[in-house]
Amino acid sequence: MLTSPPRPRPAPPAGHRDGGEAVLAELLPHRRTLDTGHADTPDAFPAQLRQLAAPVAAGEPVVLTLPGFPCKSPNPAKVLGRLPDEGERLALRFLDALCARIEAVHPPGARVVICSDGHVFSDLIRVPDRDIDAYADALRAMVHDEGLTRLDVFDLRDVYGRRLSHEARRALVLEQYAPDLETLRSLTRSDEPTRRLYQGLTRFLFEDSVAFPGTRSALQRDCRRRAYAVMQRSRAWGDLVGAHHPGAFRLSIHPQPRDSAKFGIRLLDAPDVWTTPWHSCVLEHPDGRRELLHRSEAERLGRLVYRRGRPSHFVTG
Image (cartoon, rainbow, N blue to C red; front, side, top):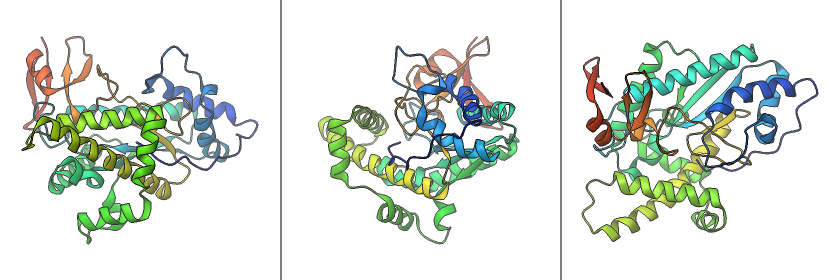
């Protein structure tokens, strides 16, 4: 998601760059990007090597922050329900295993802090805060039940406590961290990654607006307006996360270009680089391969499987 660029760090000290490159090499096969025609090598990502320099030099664990895992899409044609399912379970297991692979090349290890951002956007994406609480609580329970000891979950309740209302927490985020909307509108016109993010968000909002009372053109205007607000809050949330987790390696669930301060991460196979577990469900093939598809498509191709009494995913064959 869109965030302010971090302050530049000095180049990695001699003797520590190789360690940063080894860590980055574990991440590169899973990079989410719209770039084509270029081989990914660690030296093509100086911003990421700078982020890795300090923990590698100090012999400390690498902390990776990942804004995302907000809530399930409100569109029943995309998802199985309002709680985490097989998509989240596989994504969480992937992130924990990724930390284990980093530990093999950087013995102090790594941790992923999942910065669950649903409450930041709930009024814009039109998902009740109670559903977001249920999703976040179930996500924490899933991390615990799966024994994923290298993952943490962080949300607005960890920042402002549980006594404030959801509206009051959102207001504080905007007051303390939000950029000017006109600046974002200008960036959308001049910066290609920002334009693509705006277009992707507009599409998601349009697809997820299942009960809009007006015309299609009115809905499109409404989604464009909300997309700018989502971008504004995304940037605010990113800056808040940066303030609470200084020095962390910055992951993103959105595609990122090579020169970005953020590193786009692909959690699971999907036909679209924008697809996430919370906008889709899992289809498992007979060979064990799993991919993310909209529920309507997965339902057409497979049969529903339950886990612990709840809809989990689809299987073919």
